[in-house]
Image (cartoon, rainbow over all chains, first blue to last red; front, side, top):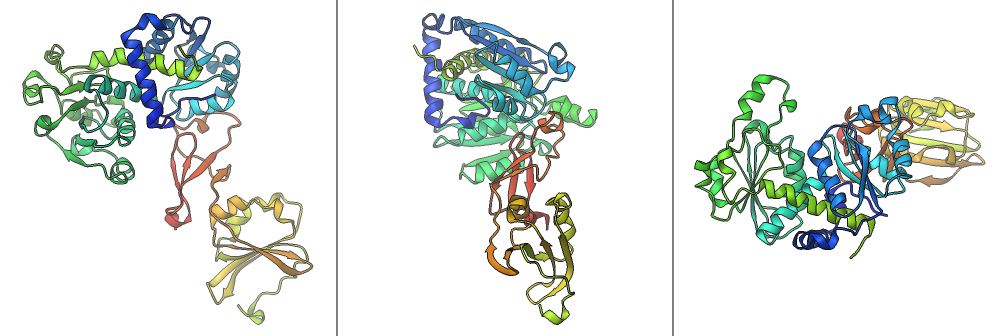
Length: 305
Length: 151
C-alpha cells in the first residue's frame, strides 16, 4: 500500500504514468465513470480549503465512487481532542482512501503511519501540498507537450510560497529546465532552495526583480499571490501585494505560446483583462487538478481499466 | 594523561567507560543518557588532564553496554571513546558514529509541527546530510544541526 506525502514520493517514470492516465481520462472521461464504484474517499479537512476539498470529492465522484468527510476541525472529533492517529484508525474502517488537510506539518504522515488505507497529503501547513504540484506539472505537460527543455518563470512570493518550492524540486528532475525567479528583494527564494536544489543539481537560473525584463524569455509564467498572513505588519504587505500585476499590456511582451499559470485564488496579481488571453491557463489548471487527482486515486487504490 | 595527576576513583570491574568527553560535557551526557534512571553506580570525572585534549571528562558506568543509548551518545559527540570493561580490563573499544535515526533524543522546535500537539508521538529525526551533521524532523523536515554546526 502506498501513500502520497510529497511529489518526490514518485519517480519520474511513475509520475509520467500517472500524467498519462490523467491525459487518457481527459480524452474519455466516460470510460472511467464507474471504475471506483463501491469505493469511498474520506476528505478529512482540519482547516477549510474548499477548492482542494471539492477537487478531491469531484475526482472521486467522477470515478463513480462516494465521498465522506468533514471540512473543519470544529466539525470533527479533533474538537474533542482526538489524535490524528486515532482518527485515521477509525476512518480506515469507513473509507478506502483518505485525503487529509491539516494546519500542522507532518500530520498526514502521522496518519499514514497508523492507516490501513492509502493517505493523500492534501496540504500540511507550509510544508507540502503534493497534489497542487501534480496539478501544475500535469497542466504544463498537457499544454506544452513536455516537462523538459522549458524556461519557467516563477513570480511573486518566492520566499513563503510552498507551491513554488515544491514545483522547483519536482521539475529539476527533468532535463533542460531553466528558471527565472522574479520577486522583490524581500521575497526572494530561500537559501535552501537556491543551494540544496538549484545549485546542487546544476540547474541554470537567474533572479530578477522586474517582470517585464523576464517576460520575453518565458515558456511558462507561474504567478503567485502575496499572502497577507505571511507578514508581520500590514505596511509591508500593502507594499508587496501590488508589486507585480500581470495585465494585458505586459502580456504583449510574452511569447505567443507562453503559458500563464496560477495556483489560485488570485487577488489582483493577474488583472482580469488577461483572462480572455488564450495564454491564460489558470482555469484549465483547475480542471487538470481534477484529472490528476482521479489518476492519483486510481493509482493508490490500484484500480486499473 | 598520567596516573599520578589523575583524581583517584575506584576501578570498574564490569561496565562501560566513556572516555575523551570534551571537558565540561559530562553532566550533559549524564542527563541525555538518563544515567540517573539506571540502577547502577556512575562516576563522573571532570576536567581530567589529557595529553590529547588538554582537559577531558570521563564517565564510568557500572552497567552493561545494552543499557546505554549509543545513538544518543553518537549524536551528542561521535568522537567519544566507549570502552567496554570486563574483569577490570578493557575488552573492547566501540566506535561511535552519527546515528541514521534519532528517536526521542531531540525534540522538534517547529511550533507548526504535528509533534507540538499529537499525544504520544515519538520525536524522530533522520540524518539528512552526514557531512554537515544535519538532521531533519521526519514529520515537518525542520533542521537540527549536530555538534559540528552547534560548536
